Length: 421
Image 1 (cartoon, rainbow, N blue to C red):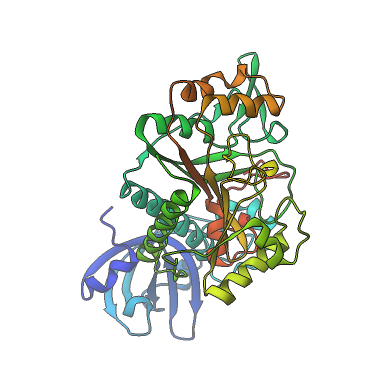
Image 2 (image 1 turned 45 degrees about the horizontal axis):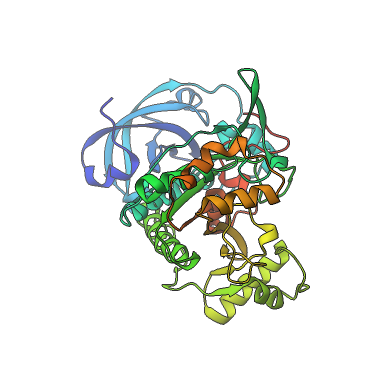
């Protein structure tokens, strides 16, 4: 098919072209009917006059049907892109005979989120939904290019694992040829081991959390943008690399989609966990930040520093995974979270790197060493001081677009209640 996409039409004014896409809308006026054709790039306006296109034929152009249109590109300042298609020849490639469950030509989908998710194949065609997925794709591309510019190597790690990475209570168990296995909660163990190979590594891929959380910010499967880097002094080196990476990601989002993103400061403000509790008005003995605390910190960072971002460092060791490196005060960690507009989107920090420290941490947690042997070997044979982070892609995109629920920016979300489509 010699096809011209909608955004290229202005370059073909005065020429005969063929476009193809979905019937987005039919606008019937007294003397003319406008057929709006949607493709992945945008919209084309086709002019149908009674003399050129019968009312009977117009009735075949139902919303959602796929059509091929061969027509003349004619200048019209009021049309999308300043051109429209006239004297058309239309061929229906795929006919939709039944009414759509909701209308796609409205600026916003009128259907509730459950209905959108039930009919994901249709809802994702709406520009608002597909636009969020384009932003996610641009963010992922920016993540890759920013890290490659910092000499990171992309890796792929197993998603079926022998032991839990974070917590044995939040894993999906499976039967792996007659013995127990788990869906990976993160690539944490493997990306640490690969620091011993490439020194700087990253991965993009799904992770699985069997947490019974039925909230607007949790999914059972989400996309994690992970990085790990060796030969660091402490977690601050990791934070600096993350800041550079976010700058590249946001620049790529704007370059690819035109979406306006907030500025990433050259140095994102950082507060220690104990100070964060004070700013948020939380009790000083709280072991973690509640969602309300995160929102209060986001408001503080914007008010005091003009920043949509704020690092919270020094989380209590009792709330961090076993591989976390303690700070000089052993009650607190060299770990951090990054909040964006009052929501945690990144967790990271410095890791333990000595074999004896891992043995001590596992023993203190009451964990047997056997299931972790492959992981421990990396430290038995020498590992540099290292650290890294994980970005929750869906949370980042939801915060960027203002979506109230991460499911709005996820193509086919998996949660407590949804396993299809």
